[in-house]
Image 1 (cartoon, rainbow, N blue to C red):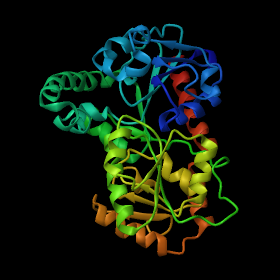
Image 2: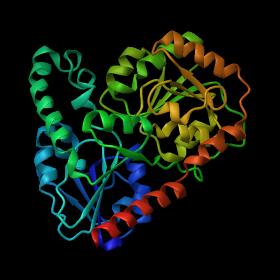
Image 3: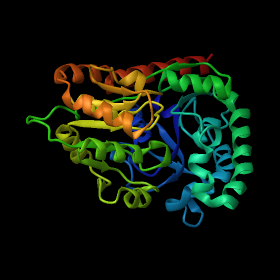
Length: 368
């Protein structure tokens, strides 16, 4: 089966949550070929890199490896030019455009949907609003993104089956694509993320891409109210602005290795998730290390954090509400073993088995 499977992913430029999911898929299907808009060699794990990787014409455009998002209007054309004639099953891992690849008539296409395109549907202002691009730039982008949203909606039937990363995302798929989706939770490496031997320190931790919807600024203000140091691991386009706004109230660590992130989890008194996530790998990595999580009580966090047992859920996206929840978490005597046991329900073996079963069923259908 492996030689007849193609995997499509929007871009390979770093190891974030989507790429960790892709890594687990690549482990299960070592002979599959990868198709992606842009690939920065060395930016993803060896497990992914050892696959045969096909890129789009965007790879060859000026500055694409650094500024690939600037070519967003070209993404529809790029994904539609991929050639899948040799394949029996296409598995797209999509948060942007690859859910709309064109498959040959005899093949089957499973879309493992990380989320419908956020910036085209419900987060335009966070990415392209006047505060981000200025009034003229924002006005210019609005028709571009409206066109992209229409294309995204109109191509929703190209996938034979949708599989969502959470019930929250399944609801978005139903709302924007009018398609039903089953749910397969993403994998968490509970063999790697394990509790440490010592006691945690008194600091709060964020592990996140520094992008608008993550709402890092809320956590910075909340930690100041509580009087607890905040460490932020991650990078992204908002890094400089957040550092200016923080004015020394948080420690920005930049991109950090997985080994160092594990130690940061183990040492944290609490791990924070102030943004509304579609699923959220970080809370489960933290819980696998036995650490409690304070998260916004919306989106995927409702499916990964158990209030009062593995952390706290915050109903109001405000610094004051987050500060109250952090204070509660610092005072509550959590059961470290119970927190980890909860995270183990989301392990990699479970994920691999569920995805393999979906691919196997699609292959049977393709041969009929």
